[in-house]
Each structure stands twice: as C-alpha cells, then as structure tokens.
Length: 423
Image (cartoon, rainbow, N blue to C red; front, side):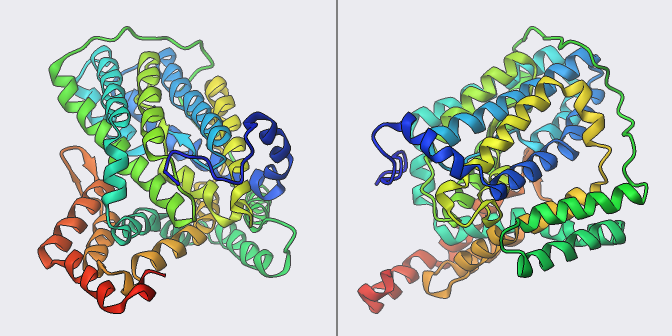
C-alpha cells in the first residue's frame, strides 16, 4: 500500500463511512485529548505570535488577522486531513517560525514579510507536488527519524517536570491525578482527569487570573503583500525549511511511530496551500504541526488508533473558533496557569515518546550512533540559518551514520541474520 492510499478497512463510499465512524471516533478520550491539544496550541504559542506582532509594531487589526489566519486555517487543515485520511494529521502553524518573526520583523516591513509568507507556501507546495518530500521520507533511516522525534518532543516531558517546580500544588496534583486515573479509572481518560483536577486546584488557589494581553476585539486588518529578495532570503527560505524539516517531519515520524502510514506528499501539499492562504491573510503559515499531531495521535486519544482522528477533529473545530474569536479568546486561554498546561501536555506525550525511543534504539535495526546524534541535536537549542534543531538533527544523524558506514553494517547484519531479521 502506498503512502497516499487510505487504509484498506475503509469502504468505497467514503462519506457514508465517515458518518458511520464519527460517533465512535468522537469518544470521551478523543474529545478530551483534542481539548488538551487545543489548550496547548492556543496558549503559549498564541503569545509568541502576539510578541512577534509587537516586535513588528503591527496594529491590533493586523495582529488579529495574523491569529485568524494561522488558527482558522490550521483548524481547517485538521478537519480536511482527518476526514480525508482518517488519521490524526493535525494542522496548526510553526511555533519556531513565529519566534523567528520576532527578529525578522524588526528590520523587514510587514508588507514585505507578508509577501515572503506567501512565497514560503509556494516553495512548500512545489516540493509537495513534485513528490520529492515523500521520496526523502521513505529513504530516511527510521531509527534516525524516531530519535529526532524523541529529542524534539522530550521537552514536553521535561516541561511537565519543570512545571512541578514552578507550581508544585497545581502541576503536582495534576500529575498524581493522571497516574492514579491511569491505574484505577479505565473508563475515564487520564489526561482529562489531570486537566480537570489541575484546573480545580488552580481555581481555588487563585492561580486562574485574567491575562494582561494588549489586543482589542477588533476586525482583522489585512495587508497587501510586497515582494522583495531580502525578505525572501530572510523569511521564505527558513520558514519553508521549518515547515518541511521540523513540522512535517515530526508529524510524519510521530504517525509512523504510532503505526500509521501517513500521506507524506499530501501533507506537504496541504501545508503549502495553507502557507499561501495564511500569507495572503497576513499569517506566517498554516501547516501540519508536529506537536499537535503528537498529542492527538497518542494513546490518550483512544485505544483504537483507527478512531484517534476524532481528537484531530475536535482540535480543528476549537482552532477554527479560536481564530474566529481571537481577540476575545486569547485573554481567556492565557488566564490558565502555564504550569497546568505544561503538565497535562507532558503526560499526553508519554506514549508517543516511549514508541519513538523504542523504535530509535532497537539494536537489531541498526543506525544506533546516528540515532543518538539525532537525539541530542534535536534536544538542543541549535539554530543555524534560521532553521531549528529538528531539521539539523536529521542532517547530523544521517551524516554521522554515513561516516561510520552504519547503513552497510546494518545490511550485512540483516543478510547474516537471514529472513528472521526482517520480522
């Protein structure tokens, strides 16, 4: 079966099949996981976008347009991909991409940045249509991809631990509730229990306070794009590399770790289209997102992986609503303690991280040193040419493996072991 095909379990009548599957896909586990993913995506990341907008001295209307573009279109991508492929392929935007905008917009006029956003989407779209990204992902050694996933997402686990130091009562109670629910409450999603218990403790301890975010409830103000070579080099190229090398690669690896066969080329194409449309509306991109996909694809979204796309549907609806009512929604979401969001997001990643580590460091599969290099590079804060560590983790892991001849060693080991090594 090719990467672009639907699982064989789906009927020929795709639309009828969806209505039959939807009630089971929207289980309490899927709904709670989708809500957790939305809370994560609409909290700290939204503040990063607002910070970048402030750095570029954007008006409130332009800031609202940016938030509308990335959240509404990101949510739309989730809905389209989940319905089309019945996989938890989740849309959002590049958080590192928003972070580098805080620097770029200091010197580049926003109209030129908007033109660069559109060109970034064009680059991603062309790479997707060419099929090149799909061929590259099939060529990449899986242990190195899985190690990159583990390194990139381990920050969620570390963040959960650090949240206990920042808010021991709130985060600590949420984590204890998660593990107790995991053991004793089979019918209730542990991540939902953790979120509810943490929120109750935060509320009664006075930690839920109105966020002071300087953004008014105003109509979006769209900006006509201008195109310049400087903005293309400073924004378009690194942003396209982030979308492909960080976001899409993470999402693809996560889905593979969970046993899916992701449509790699289609994911790249929709990320390119999302980037073009988001750019036209004044947002830096809308694409398949690694962390959001990881949360929605985790075992917290349900034991049946064929139904976990329900979490992506829930997340997509909430993202669309957040984008539509950005000026009103941002202060409400940011009123929640960061420690609570970090702790709940961290435990939601446990299953994905375990699968990634197991697949990265199974000795019989090979590429062990390359995988380790990819792990530590992805865990670092390395940034070169405006591109963050997940992309460079893949590059470094492959280069080290080539230098050590790990591919040849792996082939010899499999040939010596015979057919049994393939199973």
